[in-house]
Length: 165
Ligand SMILES: *[C@@H]1O[C@H](CO)[C@@H](O)[C@H](O)[C@H]1NC(C)=O
Ligand SMILES: *[C@@H]1O[C@H](CO)[C@@H](O)[C@H](O)[C@H]1NC(C)=O
Ligand SMILES: *[C@@H]1O[C@H](CO)[C@@H](O)[C@H](O)[C@H]1NC(C)=O
Image 1 (cartoon, rainbow, N blue to C red):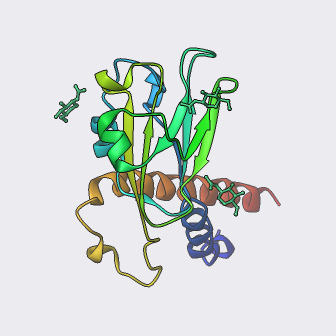
Image 2: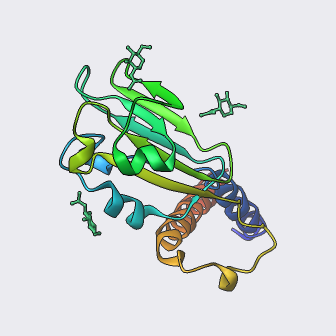
């Protein structure tokens, strides 16, 4: 048992390190579809960071993912896309830069809210203490809580193995 104890901080560190780049399913279980309020979805999941991924799941042939600038986003104007993706049923997009990203659907549903604006923020500095986290703390909390639970589960499993040998 005692041998497992020094491993706990290491496990915790490794687990936390692996959650730093997140994959977000746009719209959660509703996916990228008409009738979903993506402004609310964004509010629920922010902050987003450089290196995070947005995964759009849509119905084949029923939607596309068009990245536009802010002006085109406000007007639902897909005529001048930055990127344009419509193949298959899903599209994964990496937030490569610290900036705002705008996505719309060009199939006419944008006017009803099928549009997403996301701001990719710089990665939080690893040395920053948790108390310095910005107002987005509530959405970070479940993630770290999950990580702690995961690490605890891993430690428990390890302890069980060590008891066996
Ligand atoms: C996206 O690209 C396809 C093929 O390149 C084109 O047919 C379609 O019109 C484009 N859509 C938009 C909104 O630019
Ligand atoms: C992000 O960067 C990766 C690696 O540099 C590149 O493969 C990918 O196409 C980029 N994604 C976007 C959306 O620009
Ligand atoms: C989405 O929800 C926000 C409030 O969170 C509201 O202001 C906005 O009008 C809604 N958008 C649509 C298209 O219903």
